[in-house]
Length: 149
Image (tube, rainbow, N blue to C red; front, side, top):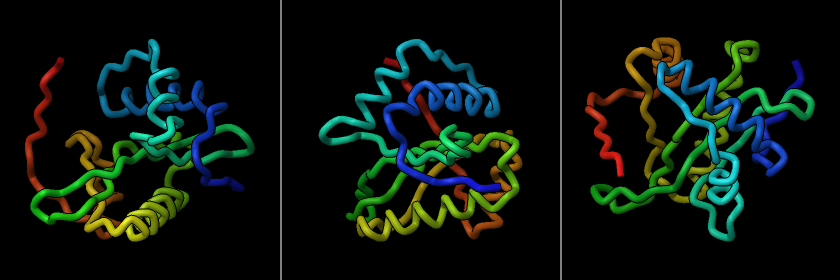
């Protein structure tokens, strides 16, 4: 299977929103697509992006994505890369693409002098948890809190 991992482009936004919706369903979370294209466009394509995204494309059609931000760790006094989302359609899972994406993120993080890459996944996402351990990640028990505004 021939695929390309490339930066997300504005033309990908409708499909990216679809993939976000599928990702949310996979992780058993509700998702409201209303207005997301515009919001993602502003985050990804502004002069100073607050979000970065790579897509996995078969031909011209994205079949997966990884999004990330660059954050700062007070304890380490250094930046870190936060992988916000990683989602691959079922037809491209188990082909080694996730590991290749992770290697790309490692290279980006090293270029930016990041201390590490951080992310979280729901406990119910057993496939992702197995994958993350398989690629050498370690888990840390924490409870994530949200406060709606």
